[in-house]
Image (cartoon, rainbow, N blue to C red; front, side):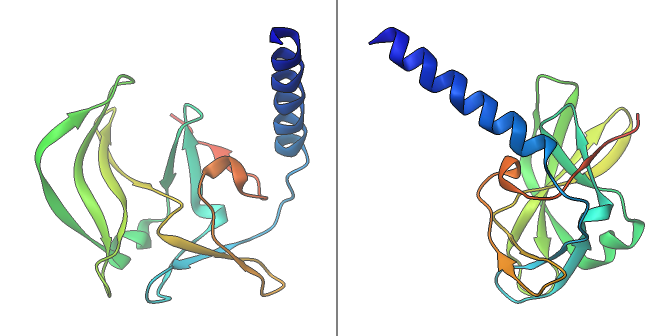
Length: 140
């Protein structure tokens, strides 16, 4: 029984790894899932420590508003979540504004966006590991 579980887990890890390696360089447009407002392109996304996804485009700040949190939430990697990001048009939750190494960075969730590829296909994602495009690492 345990050997079977180990084999299944190993196969899953291999498929996850091959999926990561086979991601295509495709520019994807992220739009608000509720109102369709443009948010950013996939080229503007960066990943911090393999977990947190930030938008590095300076004009992204004009597309969201922030709502204060009752108190900042410290994370175990030196990051502190300070405010909630919401769509400027419909107020849907897009993510959080976090402080990392003295910089304020917009962290976004997948659940607030539709992912539009160049072929016009629209998809929703539950987790970042499901995306079919490459996300570059954040340069510290």
